[in-house]
Image 1 (cartoon, rainbow, N blue to C red):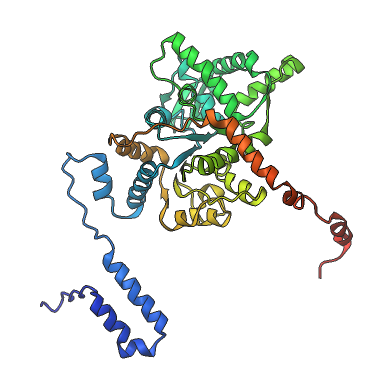
Image 2: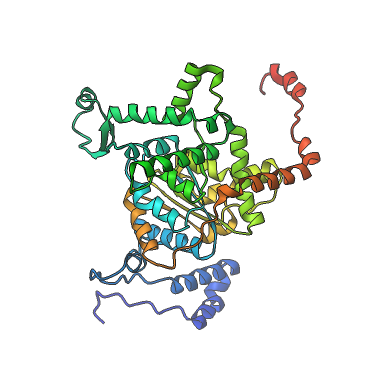
Length: 428
């Protein structure tokens, strides 16, 4: 052998591993440490080789993901695909969350609506902005690609609204405000309701408008209505639809009776998750696009059930997140499954074998993953139509709470008098 070519280390066979454990050096060190070392070596030898295939251009998206993404963010993306596929094959109830300006970017048209139509998304949590901006195209307005460095002062003078490299006329907002103001004044809206009911009713009316206008590409709202997919918005007041609610309340006074029931909304999220794993006997999967309020609003259903109401739950079994945020600044948007497990949000199995954090922009990765899934005709199923199960789900969870009421009453008191007595004491 050439002196400058290092000798290749032999593979670790079972016999060699046992020899290492019996060697004099092994005996002079901690026995447990040596056994762990040998175990690590065995695991390493069984790990997958980094031997990607040469791309010819004839491969399917699935082939490329599985054979050509062996490292770094690429492997994170490959793992995401494998976990998403497992979610479908193993019959998980799939909760999808997305934040950021995804409907202006068209992600709902390219990815989310096709996934819903194939029965692969059972519940959605997003932002009020995504629901609102989804309606622009329904009434004939356009969102265009623009230069993000062209100058915001110039865009403002021209009355062009900018979302990074997307733009639309200010009139688009004004017309969409008129649309939602008219819809929100409907007789069916004049009551207290949760965000799922609000978006279901809006989806029904939007579907009627799309039909009347001959719209060929449906909106997210109308599609979710058609497939009975609940849409939660965890911070409903942080969006333009609710700004129009505020306008109508101030203009119409008490005759405008629409009111958002936030307490019932949170309870409903827990009830739907409880319905999935307790009544339907399905494991839970969550696909997180971005982070923000939608992520936590969905994940907090598990602590609500287990820690607040004492209803046993195991948390989500599959956790897939695509986000650009760093994980070391304490932001909830970026916290991995392991951190979520400490709160009871995901199961131990999820942490060990069912989670991945893809450090990438959603718009660069998710269309590719969607294509890989939908190119396989097996990736199709009947959706759970969870909106239609709302009443039964709420009744079932309330029954569980009632059974535990005696114990729960013990959790609502605190010796406040003792705390007040100690208020004036100096810290030692």
